[in-house]
Length: 228
Image 1: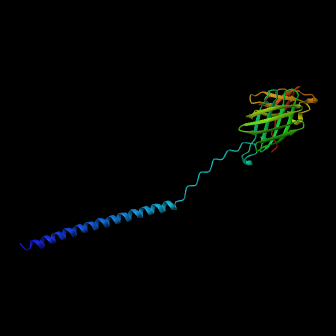
Image 2 (image 1 turned 180 degrees about the vertical axis):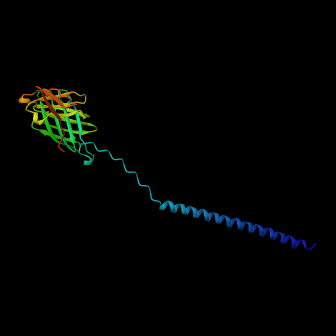
Image 3 (image 1 turned 45 degrees about the vertical axis):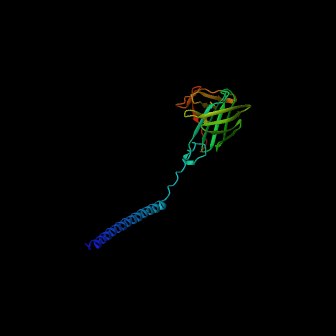
């Protein structure tokens, strides 16, 4: 009976030792897990910090307006504007290429003017022996005022596709027909014939063959554009 006390004390000691061992093992595992998690987080942070930031997208550039002289020369082409003046009593066409422009305005009876100059950076400035034109362009409209002789008209005209544009009888045949025309978007021809120094309505010509017959002679009609 005297051996029971030491045996109980030994058993209690073994239990306590087992508990302490278990706690130490759990603590060691927790420390290892925490160290592993910290290392992983540090690795991710380092990777993010070293990765280059994406470059911001460049804003889309506005396309150059064809022919107006505001874009690179290689992107330029001929652009025609055509229409009636605001009062409707005269017609006007402007042809522009690489910032150079020509225009013709007439009332189809006697008032007319050929003009030339510049059309660039939103501004139009054209002059000629019989008139002038000042205006602006943008958003698909050319507008301003144009003068032919003693008459001045306000205008707002839009780009037009061929055969709209400016036409004139061939230089070598102007002793037989000295005429100029504006061809409007709807195909209407408005022109003045100044043959012999007397102004009158110009005869209609064939826009496909670009000819007109006058007194049995076939006259060639040429489209007009600014010199390159």
